[in-house]
Image (cartoon, rainbow, N blue to C red; front, side):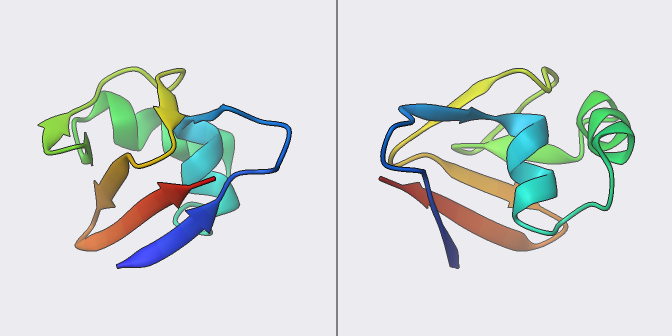
Length: 71
């Protein structure tokens, strides 16, 4: 599991932004289609919204890579 640290002044990051910022996808467009295709799970449930807010303590799973968001 890899940790992703939120910026000090942020309470959340959007799912598509997280995938790109964590280096799991190269572009926002790629993130959009991977999410829409049901390839991303948030806290164990498939997420279909690239704008879904990911908060401190949430975990994201994509292609067997798990990321935990921390503050």
